Every structure is written in C-alpha cells, then in structure tokens.
Length: 101
View 1 (cartoon, rainbow, N blue to C red):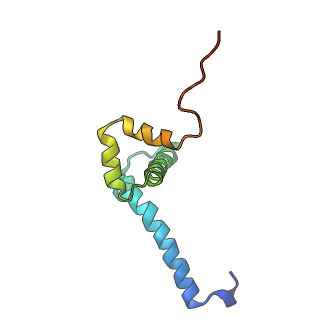
View 2 (view 1 turned 30 degrees about the horizontal axis):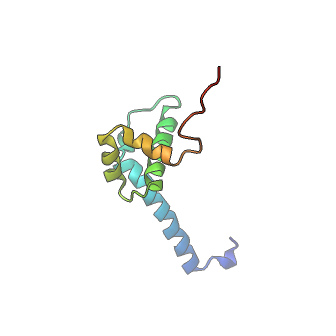
View 3 (view 1 turned 45 degrees about the vertical axis):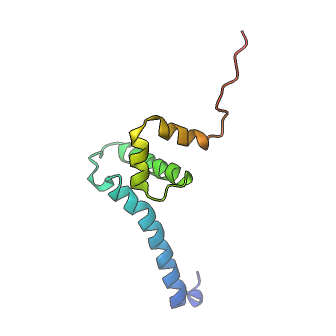
C-alpha cells in the first residue's frame, strides 16, 4: 500500500483484521490445545504438532463448530467421530473398488 493510501481509517481496518485472525487461530491453539505448555521442542515435532492442531481446528470449523473447545470434547468422547468428520470432506470414495483376481 502506498503512503498516500494509508489513512488512519484504513490502517485501523488492517489492524482489526490482523487481530481477528490472530485471536481466531492463535488464541484457540494456545488456550484450547495448550500450545504454549507443550513440551515438544526437538526436531520437526513442534511444526508437526502445530500442523496437526491447525488441521483439527480446520476440520472442526468446516463441520460448522463455532466453539472449538466444545467440539474437541464432543469428538473426544467417541473415537469414530473425528474420522466421520474427515470422511465428510474427503475427495476419495468411501468404498474401495473390488479387486478382480
């Protein structure tokens, strides 16, 4: 953005938008999933765990969950629920073709 386009109103809108995204993802990752308390610190494990947390949040949001903590508890009660949610959005068929010998 050029300096002549940077009005206070426009800058305030950018800041609000930034914090909306920040609060929506980072706060959920920290508070709901306890990311700051994680003791995973070596190798690629921190990035892998962050990706898994982001995936869980994305799947919950895609299924219409607005409260991530409640959605996590709901899915934790029955192990098949997360897989059912993933299969809802899968790009592959739910039944595999039969192999012909």
